[in-house]
Image 1 (cartoon, rainbow over the protein chains, first blue to last red):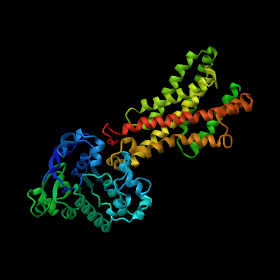
Image 2: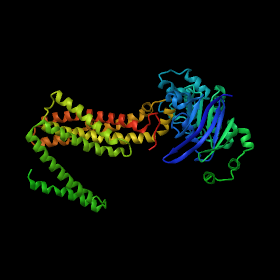
Image 3: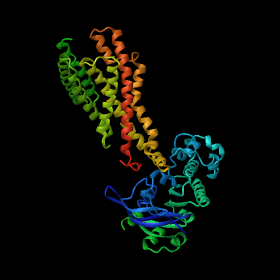
Image 4: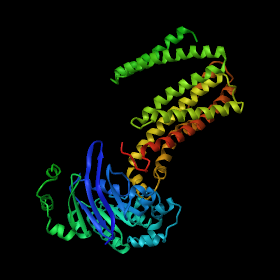
Length: 246
Length: 249
């Protein structure tokens, strides 16, 4: 299996505070890697380094073996799509949201809007709807379609279902996993929901206080965590504050 | 107007002070400071203007205008507190608005390049540009902070920082220009502008005063447009890194 993303010794400090501390791991091509950990672990910060919404203060990230610092930042961001917790759709129609990415670089959509809508489980009529008038679940579907319109190779998912109600959350979760499998996308999925991480991912990385504690195949990680911290975290025995004090 | 009647006008300040004391607004001190400053500043400017007008030499115009621009820039830059380079970019924007507008006024022979015309009109251009740039800068900050999620989404889709801030920029430029446009719509109906009122009281023909007022109103829309746009185009860059990353303030 080829390595799609390789994170080597990543550190990130903001105003003297260390948010990420020498994090290294690799993401195999076409796999979904769940990033779990208590809040303040640096999961979202880590994700934002992959498409250079922020830069690390130390270490390097490689995409297909190339240091992302040497790539054109816009080209990188088109190759690495992102779905946030909040869909943050732009004012206008659903269709204009989906076409946003390709239009930026002066391109037309590679496929008709209806096809993108179908892919995210929305009817063709949604194209002309006002984006601000959709339900939370529908908005997140449009946000996913908007990211897919750039034909990304990697998808960064920052708690994409945690702002949704339970029903919509499950549907969007299923949808994202289907889309990833269908396109063979490599994905990094930040989640605070351990059951979700088990359902969606091939591999899991546990982070606490900016450090990688443990990583492994999702099934074996959840069945037999090796480190004491991972065992305590999965058992819910140790509170977040105590973990952060480690 | 006699000096004695000017002294009587202090009673107006007393009315405001009584209201403040009565309603417990605690504005008495500010009112006193404001009144003294207005008296001192205006009197000083009066003598400076009289001196410059009596000399009637254009060389004296430039330092005066430069001082006005610097003071206006410092004042408006406060609206962009914490934004690196706020003073420089605001001052530059106001200076360019003054330069463009004044160059047009003089080169189209609308006014002669003499202190009597250039200084008062510059004061109006710079004063309005100051208010407009302060409003625009303030709005730009609040738009960028309230649209943070939207801006990050746009950047993540491959937008440049300029493309990602387009809606925020539009809102901010508008915020700078709208008071002047609104004033243009209601001028004469709701209020008679200070300059026109002053001219009429000082004995000018109302028709002549109105001509100048129309000129001023049109001139201000240009200068306010230039400043608002320039201040926003210069300021938005400060919110991003070179790699088109949104800074956190």
